[in-house]
Image (cartoon, rainbow, N blue to C red; front, top):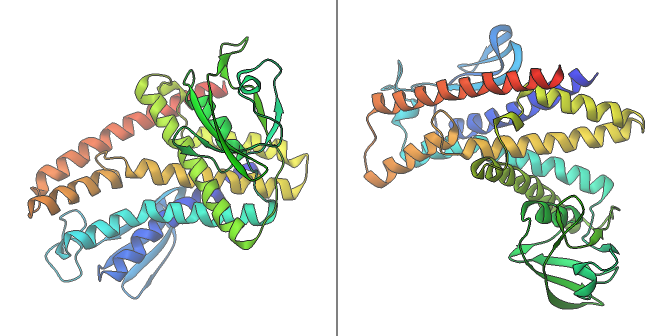
Length: 344
């Protein structure tokens, strides 16, 4: 059953990403040759109004193939991607990641609307900790840590874990009044820096406005998690061995499903939606990175074109994207190897 959930989640996230490209292509008068889910040979296919809609054998990935997208045949004809303005092309490419954020927000609203949100109330203070010395008390609502606005209890945990050893200027509310204190987290027996607080683990339901704004906060939390993971890779706090690909994602879904099944269908659905939010947010952020072959790489070339006033040599751009694709394929092989080794 976990395999089915994995296919549903991955297909939904990829389909929504490609649907973003598709909608903006249609809106800008670009001819979409094929819109497909999956890779490899077609299982089902139908042509409608000039576009072929396909479901392919391998249930990973997808595509929105546009006429003349890569300076191919038909690039000079009406309806070609390359014949559109640089801003039209940029909107089409950026729509994929943007739609991943829309999907994440939509799913987050479902979660918050049905299960509530976790406000950042302090639920406990460790005796003799930096938080106790700063005067924090149970029931205080944390609203800011340095320049970071805090909306959820999980924001506090993420901030502490990703800013180890840093002093914190913390703003909190008590009896409706805002207060600010300075805290220097201390190392515990494991070597981790902690403030000495536990945050509210319970979820609260609110108004429609609360559902919308805390749905946005939920998405921001997952985006922050993604950005912090990338930062850890860049500064060497994490390595390639810590990356996970499709196999790792399926394993995560399987573990989550196994644990959730003990508590019933409602818990399974909630946790699967949570994973979908995480994956959709991840895909949106990663695709915006200025790496050749990704949407972010193409956006970078389009921005350079907008600044220069003319397009970069198509052959040179194609070579850069091809090199990027090869590098990504090699990385995927390494990640796949890591995932398999973790299973052994």
